[in-house]
Amino acid sequence: MQETAINKLYEAFLKCGQKICTDTRKPVKGSMFFCLKGANFNANEFASQALESGCAYVVVDEQKYATNEKIFLVKDVLTALQQLANHHRHQLKIKVLAITGSNGKTTNKELINAVLSKQFKTLATVGNLNNHIGVPLTLLSLTKEHEIAIVEMGANHQGEINALCEIADPDYGLITNIGKAHLEGFGGEEGVKKGKSEMYRYIAKKGGRVFINADDPVLHELAGAMDKITYGTTKLYDVIGKQINSDEFVSFKWTTRYNEKDWNKLPLVKTHIIGHYNFINLLCAACVGNYFKVDIEKINQALSEYVPDMNRSQLEKTTNNTLILDAYNANPSSMKVAIENFARLENGNKLLIIGDMFELGEYAAAEHKKIVELITEKKLEDVILIGPEFNKANTHYRTFLNTQDCLANLKSQPPKDKLILIKGSRGMKLEVLKEAL
Image 1 (cartoon, rainbow, N blue to C red):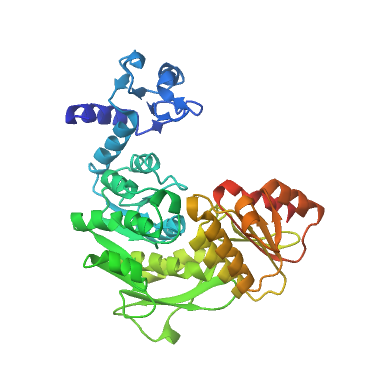
Image 2 (tube, rainbow, N blue to C red):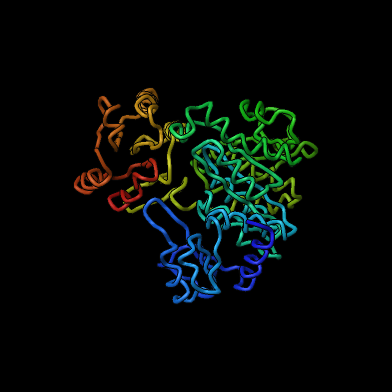
């Protein structure tokens, strides 16, 4: 869009109180409605309906629907949404921290927001609105009161992270890790590495800074000579941490390069988060908070108080069992660490329920087979595998082709007094199994 066109659109956006709508089924009174297109829908067709439903303005990209002075005609509605978000971001004096990675993006975003909001007015991505539509919508929610934005970025193809960075123009970046996620779209592990590290390249070009788990050799290599704020466990980084084993919840201590180094004198941070693999996420949040000069006591308080939701690393006690609900998503990397953590827990009555991992393409058979081999290696005996891929990879564990078949079986033979890990890809919808557990 030309500068005059974006300015006119922006003026209207401010007039309607920064309210955005993209779904005519849920019209927002007084908002600006963007007529987005998809494979099976064209919202241009609902332009007049959006105005009748109470929207103040409408943005279309087809001439025949531009029938009203309150309807803006643009070349492409999605591009206009993204350009408007970028324009709005630059009208505000605000720091933007972008987060991507194969695993733990949302957990890191939530933890960092919990810490920074103790001292700043923050805005963080809602849920996992982390794509080419979600990122602009997040940015358009920013107001003059906000001081720091924490923007999650997801991707499953090359170029997507760079495109999202072009929209959000982050000052700081964080790649949680680079693992086996979206192998099909990225074209293998090297493709994932190249795609996710687009964030580093964008921020390096801008002269920004990145927060980096310096114990991770892949991230260390990709970051190169960038301006880094480091955290980890093995050397004198900017923030150094130590996990303290206690119960199923993560407890840890941390300090900085210049503060107390005697672990016995440091406070113990007890959290409501399960899984030893979440320790590094907690340490990352402490590192970000420390960099932005949040009081140490406030950092520890935020991490102690945070309770996960949305089926991510949740511990839930039912009438009959204790559930570790990690059913929001799964890929080979996150599945591996979840199973390894489950195997470490000292409980003699365990049940492992896992579902297929999606978006693996030609790697699917091999990666599901590796998970089955890992289960055998860890000597987990009471196991349920769900989905066509695990059915093909399995040799002797209980299997079901779909979640509903498994649910019916569990209802007829409900487990009791078990510690149960439930993990699988979003499309498996394993959380429905809770009603039988």
